[in-house]
Amino acid sequence: MTPQADFLAKLTTADEAIACVGSGMNVAMGMAIAEPPALLEALANKVETSGLNNLRLWYFHSLGAAEKTVLRRELLHRIRPHCMFLSSNERALIKGDPSLDPYWPIAFVPVAFSGSPQLLSERVDLDVCVTTVSPMDRHGYFTFGTSNDYTSTAARSARRLIVEVNPAMPRVFGDSLLHVSEVDAIVEHSAPLPEVLSGTPSAEEQAIARIIATMIDDGSCLQMGIGTLPAAVCALLEDRKNLGIHTELLTPALVRLIQCGAVTNKEKETYPWRSVFTFAMGDAAFYDFLDDNPGFHSLPVHIVNNPQHISKNDNVVSVNGTLQIDLGGACNSESLMGRQYSGSGGQLDFVRGATASKGGKSIIACPSTARDGAVSRIVTTLDGPVTTPRNDTQIVVTEFGWSDLRGKSMNERADALIALAHPKFRDELANGLR
Image (cartoon, rainbow, N blue to C red):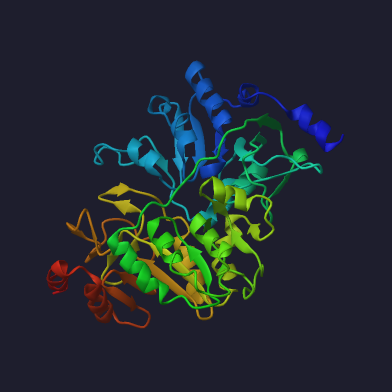
């Protein structure tokens, strides 16, 4: 059978494709831009109109398609979202009294992003995987497009793989190919991809970005986290030469560094001349630049985020945010006021990878305060889990400066971090040590 004949034999409607989903099943969905809107709508409709229940949905980072379908509150007595990284959708759903159940109706699953492929392939008995892919070429290959991450592993671990082919999904180079023979059902659905923009950095974030930019030299290999601060840092690097990219998340801010010539990837040890990533989010122009561009190399997250693999490149600079830092340097980057806010993601992977890199710098950055200056982010005791242990924290930056904690004693760390706190909290923090 030719690939084209195989495609037509497997082509069906979203409702027919989802008919295989039954009660008690484990279903993995593509994350972020790869959420398949037509398939998720069909799945939500089936839950709503049938007796289907106890459906376990596994995923990272949901966006609008999931919010409007499988994450509708009225369906969550029959769909149990097993979320490994909360977005605004899940944060809205778990509002309420944390003394009753701080996660209901979300089943939050703590796991490093790099560990999610192994979790889904070895610990979860996946029945179905649904995801959006780019159109098939004449040889029978789709690509996973913006979302290689855990999706490429889950797709091949599930008993049944259903893909939603969207002509707007960019065709991506790297280890991103999926042959039509691996697919059980195909649905075609044309829709614009979700656009995710970084927003405007605060004055404090702009000050932090200026400090961080001074630490990034020509030839550095960049990993930038999500949010306005990493974007602000990138905006200050356009005069650099021969930067490289090895990052979990590919963003428009990083692409602009490619377009202006600051990024060449020529000095990287792994995948030279190519920008490595595992998932991507941006705007329409960003997706167009990514499409069919051999300068990008997509890989599964257990490879991209492997600290040993990261550290093969020299001069890795990892920039990530946090919510709280205690006076020993431990970071809580995922919990606010007793509530799960996001997840551990890949922060610790890149902290360790950058630190192990020859000439590398792991940078944890945050404004010194939260809630319009009412709360210090530098604290004596964390309010939530330790995302990055004090043993691993290297450089900390706030708008008041920076400090490299490596080799410092606990007292020296406390002194250094108090100096990075907002002045109105410094005496209180110092008194908390006595």
